[in-house]
Image (cartoon, rainbow, N blue to C red; front, top):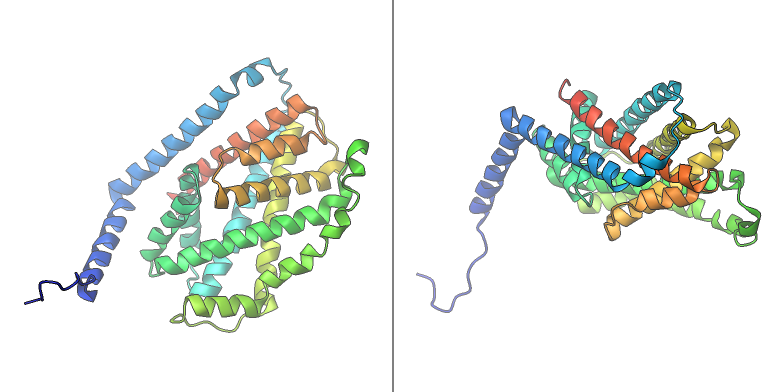
Amino acid sequence: MPAPNAKPSRLDPDMRRRLTAQLGRWSRAMLSGWQGRLLTLFFLLLSAVVIAGVLLGNRDTILNYDWQIRPIWLLFILGFFLVDLLVATWAWHLLVARLAGYRNFRRSAKICWWANLARRIPTPVWYIAGRALMYEQVGVSKLTVSLLSTLELIFFFLSGLATTLLTLPFWAIPAEMQSALSGYWLLFPLLPLSALFVHPRLLERIWRRLRPDAALQPLAWRDTLPWLGYYVLTWVLGACVLFSVMNLLTPVPLAAMPAVVGIWSLAGSISLAGALTISVIGVREISLTLLLTLLLPAPIALIVAILIRIVWLLGEMLSALLSLRL
């Protein structure tokens, strides 16, 4: 019999294991069968509501705009989006295969594309949690997937900054801003500094500290540099989608493409930093609109920012529907 003044004991290991097992069963039930289809429908409806909100919130701008659509660019939008989706999925698959030992690309694609629906909920927490629960069903621990998702966000952010810096010399900066930005070359030391964050020894040491029980072969530059390269490619392909949306409304010369890549990667990096800190909705749209005014009249820049958000929402809905067939 415990002493009257004894402190309540912590949850014993057996009880903890039983609770963990029960939570696992609940998550598997929610993500499979009719419950999984119902959850997918909920997120699809949530995405549709967000699209409707974007349209209604910008109703006056949309109705007053003199629309002159060039339909051929719709094919480019779809094509570039699908390639971008595949490259981003492949980059994630490489991370999971190398650090978690899970090499089923088809299953990883299914999980990633379905989890995209959770991006409609502010902060990346729900998106990461959705991934983690689904990977747990195939034997990859939630902690491992959460850490890998954090690593992916770091790669996205660093590759976005690198892409922006590499394209800055090609930006058409107005004369009144050139003097203020004349020292942008001082930012280039950030490139090798960013490379330190993806140094294989550093990543390996961090991974072993966080997952001491995981078997891991020594990492090398041939692992980390391709990861970074693929994420740079996703920024470039995303910019191709943006370039196509711009040309859907008005002719934009191919010579502007480097600046479009930089604008897209900078706006995305700002949005990513906002999502990880203050969770402000619309950061990408605001920053993208301001940056696009370097290339387009302000009304068209605003319409492009609205359209690119709708394109991405529709694309994520499409990828979620495709995941149901995998």
